[in-house]
Amino acid sequence: MERNPSLFPLVLKYALIIGLIAFIWGLIAYMTGWYLQNWVNYVSYAILIAGVILVIRNRRNQQLNGYITMNQALSTGCLFSVLYGILGVAGFLLTVKFIAPDMTEQILQATEEQMIRRGLSDSEVETAMEWTRKFMQPLWLSVTIIGFTLLFGGIVSFLAALFLKRNPPEF
Image (cartoon, rainbow, N blue to C red; front, side):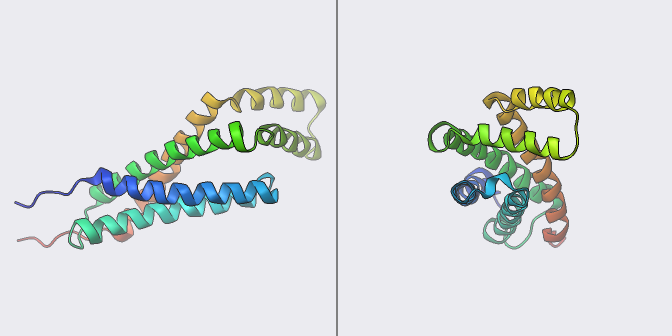
């Protein structure tokens, strides 16, 4: 009986590589001022999607002799998403604490301006901004980032597993 290679080292390697790419992308977005624009999020989603696909494909091809079941692919993608989310939180906290301490305030200002442009009343804007400030605290942001990354990454993992799975031949 063949031993199943360890999942964690491979997934951690890819989470670190893709996480570093995402961190560098975040720094570029900050330095250019793009981080206040919505399209930047789509690039971040694409980085996560690429990471999930790469880690599942490479586990299949490098560790499992070209075969991967739906469950193996799904667990690989979900573990990657969790680790990627944790690294994303670490990168974001590092950025807002040391590299760009003004980022949070700029995001809040841009959010308030968007609400005003959409025609919300002063009281609606005030209430929404009160809640937004609460959720911009490090603890809430960390929970939100990891939760969203796991949810989105889980969906992407499921879809990628559907396309990348190759069941081993029956003997």
